[in-house]
Length: 398
Image 1: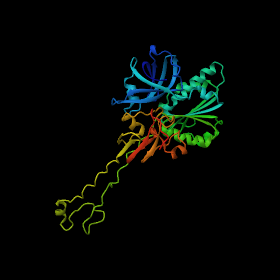
Image 2: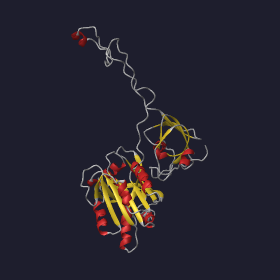
Image 3: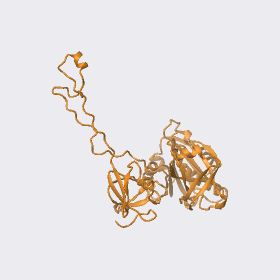
Image 4: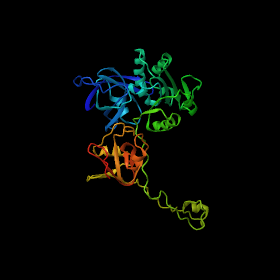
């Protein structure tokens, strides 16, 4: 489904880990929506705490009625959309649904016999959606794969849906879980809890999975993907991440941050100030001090984005991705996951320099051909020219 529709909040519920669960209802005039289901995601448009409209994706964790679906949102304290949803989306309030997407549903795991789900923090929303569906199928007498869940969280109180996960572990012979607490001292001998992160020895001791599901932030997904590829090279990888690569500080220009200071003849090498040395001490302390001139302030590098084939260019923000820069200028470009997985925001670099963060979509040949994902690419100094097609797809011509 790709249409703007206003959905209303039916209810909210607090969950552990600063998470709030929102039940959202489609309007009666919209009818049943078969595109929305557990495991898929919805793109919502909502204002951040500063009032700027933003687009964010959230996994559908449950569908209690044909026209009602649930999402779980963690309060981050960054004044973004999540914080605004926590503060203002109450029963009866509305939020704009832009589209649905994603293909990691229960059908994607039913085809396998052994599945490892590895999630970080709020990334547990996709596993809980799939586990609920698997539990219902098992209750109906359907065969389901054996599932191991590895969940990494900073503290015990940050583990969302813990009671539900423990109940599944204790009552279902096809499911086992371990929670890894990364920033809080705990008793590591517990069956369900361990301190630190999963080790290579733990991964090697697992039953060999035919599929591995990774869910979490961009960096978490990158790091766990490398480890999974090394330990389980033949397993099918299913990856979901809704966080973009973190922006780095803008690169300074070539102006030096400090200038050498010329010291008076005979002054100690460590003396940074021009203090008279031929006066008695009491006079020297009261003599005017000749301070070295202030070094010139380093200015951020100026970056410019230009669109090939169009008379359009503007000064870019190096602290934001190409996707964010393009959207701020109203340049049409397709996007969905915003984390380098779906490939919707693919474009082509025609000329200029940029900084690329790792993605999960492009191969080495794509990169050699000049393709990039706008959500994982950042402008640097100078002019960066990119090619777009109508609708926001990259052109094939240089």
